Image (tube, rainbow, N blue to C red; front, top):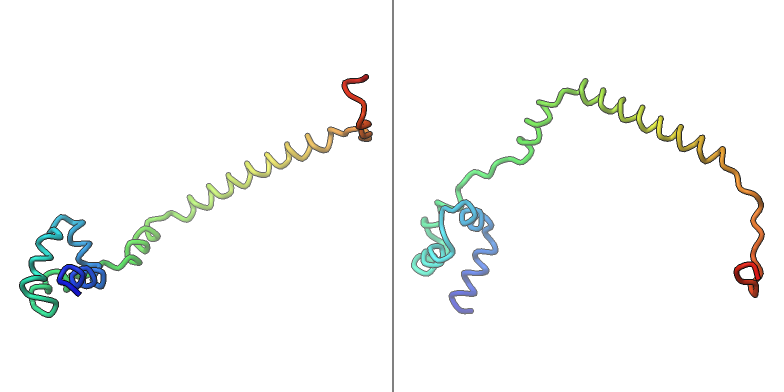
Length: 113
């Protein structure tokens, strides 16, 4: 395996390298140069691997703390009332329209011949 392929497999195993590039802190060229000079097992990678990953649940919990549940309940009640009104209106309109019995048209008869 050549050096490029070894670096690709190394980078695939460490997604924090991609995050560092997306943040604009480094480039693939710089990372490859570090890999070429120092290899995989060195303190050169400590800048990229020891970063604290934020907890995604913490952000969700902060959002949940800021939700006013009374307001949510009021909106749900309003939506239920609106749906009930629509169901009532559509239920009456379909019940009042009645069609007569359907008689099939003969196959050989076209346009009232």
